[in-house]
Picture 1 (cartoon, rainbow, N blue to C red):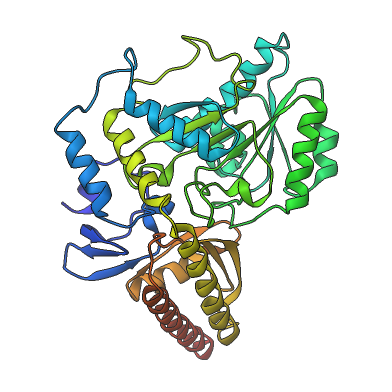
Picture 2 (cartoon, helix red, strand yellow):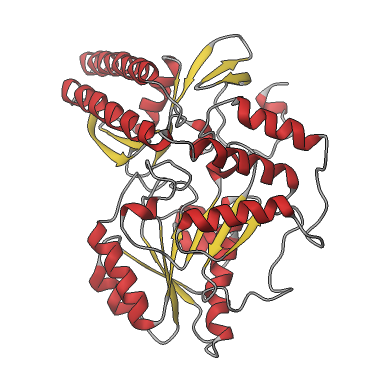
Length: 403
């Protein structure tokens, strides 16, 4: 079927490329070509493709139970929730959803309901930051605040106040009697791999404590090892009151989670929230298997080592190709390369070299390899980037000569 004849709603600008299967950090296209996958399903396939532990977990669960409804107990879900709470270092409760946007919706509701339960229903507004991305539902779009995502969907959901990232004075000025919490990504992925300073995040924690606000971390992209720690908030030495997870949590199987302290979740009583498919047995089995792999000794040390290698190698390419690349940023294996040429041109040139990457805001291209990536695959990715830069430079020279 041609693209023009597809019955899929045309909301994605899809590349003319399809894949038949995957092996570790590699994807095999329907024409047999092999691609080095540094997109990881946009930070989802943290353990690569067809990881044997995940495959075995899903195969075993598929023979037992696919769905049984949240009307009944879930022993495996209880186990997963307990493990996440323990590893988080702050949470007491977990709500399982199906996506990052759903996890964020839960986080927003927890934050608002917390104050209503404490006798202050007027406290519902949440402070967010420019460049953020929190999801595609109407509420999470309003939290994101980007006009290009909001256009055409009617009045934005009320209750979000956006300020520049890193501007503590702006945060202080906007806190008022209706403020319920502060929502921030430890690193803005979609926003261009932009990280707030440790001092800024610690100051947000202090402001929340001072004004009885909830601090909410959106770790949908940064969580589950992407920054070299299981959760990115560990880098700041700061614990949130509420945290959303998704993407890598199921290693490719759809699952989201909202974690909260007992105090933050005080208003979340029976009937206050729900999900038909949230925490279904297949998703829970996948997430428990992901944790089994990630919590083995040496896993995060490997991520940190590969991060250092990748950043060093990328920086050397930037030095040689200043007409194409500007700088390298990010933590762990959430790495951004700021482009001089349009970032879309760089993504396309890399795809021609059989290296898959994904764009972001601020004219950045994200390198998001599976966390199991090898040093040899890092070297290969950089060699392909080098070839892409050479091709882009040659194209620029041809255009200049033609003018």
